[in-house]
Image (cartoon, rainbow, N blue to C red; front, side, top):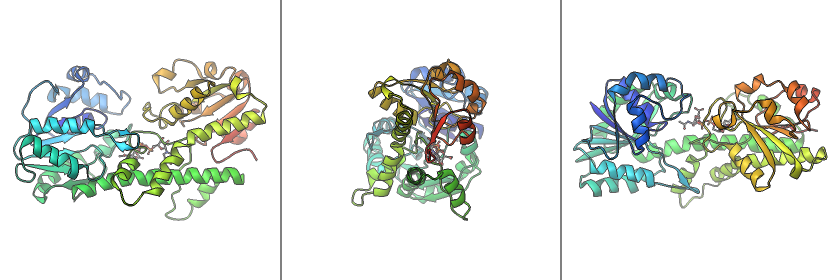
Length: 424
Ligand code: SAJ
């Protein structure tokens, strides 16, 4: 069996490797010529810290035909589209996926199955992808070619673990392709394979991430309530979650990443009549958390008589999630924008993000008036707070991820303030 994979990012490259692993003959395509040049030599152009990715690339790159868009080839039985689907504001920016679809339709082979693994807004397949494929190729859906929507389910730092175990939902244009897709995906993942129509598959993917975003927003809203009521949201959360089937998520300094901040907007952009108020409000609540971190910092400065205009801030963590170097839509970036607009001085330390790993924690916090923890990297467990307390100018610690032990921090003389757990 032969497969093409178009778009070699966090989803496409691991998929090309996985397909090769299960014995499929793979042509892997990307528009970025330098990326293709590196891949042809077995060099990993991104996500060097992704478990297994470098090892597997080294093992399989010779078996994969890496091509850039200028190189010609015949399309194959399966054509996977794994192209990034960003937003323009809060609406889908389909430019990239449409370029890929135009590309597919110019090389389409009879009876091929085009599989959209990119996360797209509901109705994209029906209203945009299929008409475009039919018009450009002159082929007819379910006569000359077939379509499936199988949204990827991967998380950076767990890509191969999830790719080979998570259940998959596959929307199909015709039930005639179910046996072929079932036998293929059963080799890709040990997880359950469920078949449905392609719009349902688009809805499932955007709903699963909207579900997570709304749950995180709920936790963040309760944290703000707990600050006003002067109780510790983490104690509240622990006690609430003791009730069976209760899973209050973790409040924090914001919601970043490649999918959670985006997918609710993809869903809401497709629902015109009924405004998805809860989902849209949840996005605003989560996007406002970096602003809340700034508010907690300002309050601590007022309490300690510090003029924020003259203050130095030390920020711990720049990636969007703990123990990762991935900085896409990082909440720290939103905080940095606020500080920059207000001309407030700050330094960042993140041992996992090259750009912010060259100074030591002591150098970054020296003479600072507040340490702000934005990301709960395990590496921060090694910080010697006692030593840091000796080099700061003002002992203020703002904890965005309930990372530090309040009592221990206060014993070192810090004013401690956390999301959902502020001084009485
Ligand atoms: N976050 C919170 N509170 C929480 C959970 C997360 O503030 O309780 C924040 C994180 O700090 C991060 C953002 O939300 O900034 C996203 O975190 P995440 O754990 O959801 O990580 P992602 O973005 O890698 O989410 C992916 C998603 N998987 C796919 O899209 C296939 C998500 O649906 C999964 O639930 C998540 O991985 C996972 O845990 O596997």
